[in-house]
Image (tube, rainbow, N blue to C red; front, side, top):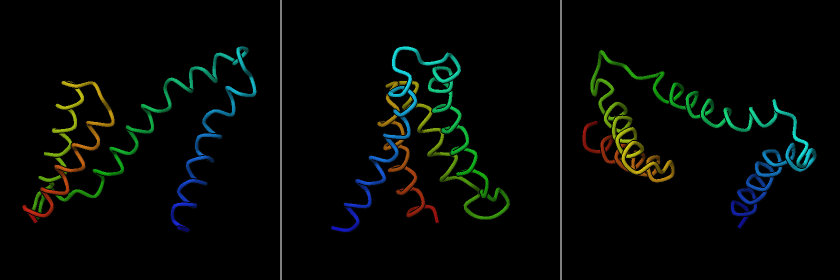
Length: 103
């Protein structure tokens, strides 16, 4: 029960922080705030990809194969379906299967 409350509080806090500038400014949102609202999600995804791939060792088994295969799978699914949630979920499933089979 405590975990559910924590997740709920974190979700509400995250949503509040995301929506707060738009709630404060309303229709008079400054251009730079709107710009940040458009570009930051992609920048954050890029940083997360770099963070996830930074510790890959190409010199020892499994040579980064699970990460690279799952990453390629995410790219293919995203290009095909244009659905970020589906791409991330499918890539996570493929990665989890690969680390159990390859390692």
